[in-house]
Length: 347
Image (cartoon, rainbow, N blue to C red; front, top):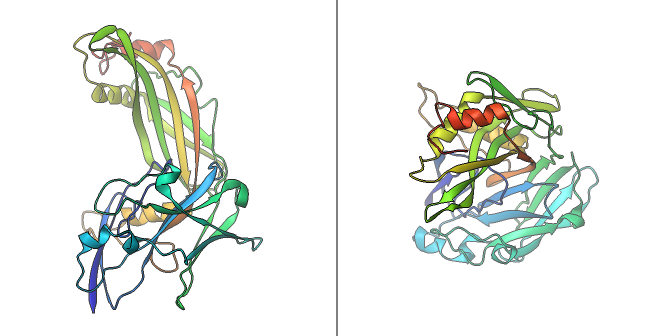
């Protein structure tokens, strides 16, 4: 009998990049869960994939997790053959409504611009499965099934998701220029969504310029990320979602995130608003991660997977961004003279 301890550990949003996972690590939720598998050697598929109609190509990571009897896990992790399936394994996407089946190509992510993070696992090759957007032509609300066929009389591994359509940040929520009022007032942000979108990550990208310490007349462009929320849940079937930001929280964030300048000054250039939406599967994963963590709990987080066998998540995502919003006169005055930001040197 072989006892294997596997740890899943990872992160919530952003979902704007393909997040690499290892044969024994799933980047999905900011928690850590240990579980034991006590059995004879068993092939355990590990999957990470988010489909997006906005991508020019769809990539899915499919790996395996196992430990040879008497093996050293750290040594095995450096062997690519221990992480990846051989080329005889087929990975396909099926459109459930039409029955169409699309085989995915086995590629090296390092050659596709998706390099693997340095760590305990082999970084080359970095096997992913790819299909071009033009080959499958996914549409909003398409129901898609992932099928992994491993041969050797093993049952196919499957997972299903519904494709999210485009998100649209509303031009009047907020209006441009952005006017933050008194610190206890709220600014409303809003966006429209497709039915399959269930959970959202919302953030500001704050652009400013800052004096070069070596030449104060030279202004260096900077960007600061302000995460408003990583888990805004769509509470009903409405196609519109809203979020309210307290004005004081905006200035308080800047005051805590930026150091006081010993010399020189800063110029505020603008705000980009970015929202990322994910499907029902990611919402369920998040709920499980939040469950049983109360004051009376044992802090044991159950395992989430929407695969028929193995571990992982197969879902969908979409991103929307409004760029170049400016601050109104009242907001600029608060930035220059307000209690949280008056020492930051904004002009």
